[in-house]
Amino acid sequence: AGRQAKASAVNWANVAGKLAVMAAGAQVAFRAVRALTQGLADSKNELLDMSTRTGIAADTLGGLRLAAEGSGLQFGNMSRTLANVPKLMSDASKGLSTAVVAFEDLGISTEGWAEELPNADDILRQGLASIAEMETTSERAAAATSLFGASGSKLLQALGDPSNLDHFVEQARSFGVDMGPAGATAAADWQRSIASLGMVAEGAADRMSGVFGRGGLGSI
Image 1 (cartoon, rainbow, N blue to C red):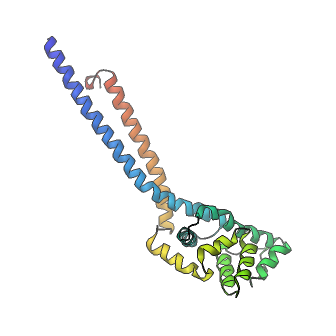
Image 2 (image 1 turned 180 degrees about the horizontal axis):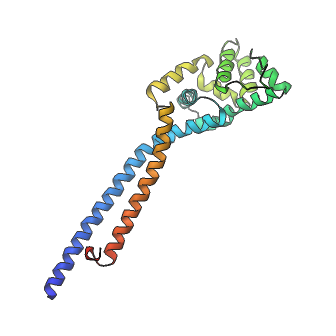
């Protein structure tokens, strides 16, 4: 009986060891998949979050991010620069003269903004198109500062030429992440799914640990 009990204990130890290896392997695989896909979700969420803050379309932001990173700039640092557009629009809608003049200098009328503000993405594009038509770099820099704030020149640095915006947007749309409605939904679903999967994995490991801590599968 003693010899059989020892053999049984060894068998349970072997089973426990193999299951522990399997559990560890599953966790490693899970972490690898999460690391691979989390970066994609983070990339989408960065654009979606900034789109919410600025009112600028996520596709447009994707093009600006491509331009920024291609010129050695950190796109995240442009958040305040781009957020200046809706702020200036709000100021203009309230009749603040400096804001009204900033838009009028770019050929953008603020008439009717007190009743309803236009789309920030449209205003951004109109502003950049007007800046692109200016002859000197000094004029462009001054106009960019009026529209985007003190860091407006960095946006010009990223684009090279303001008229290049559509080129970068098309590149980002063709080869980058999907920023349409389906892409936004997928990013949100991924965040929820990965949180649920992590909870399930931890729960399974906890239950397995509890089973073997109480003396093996015979205690189930």
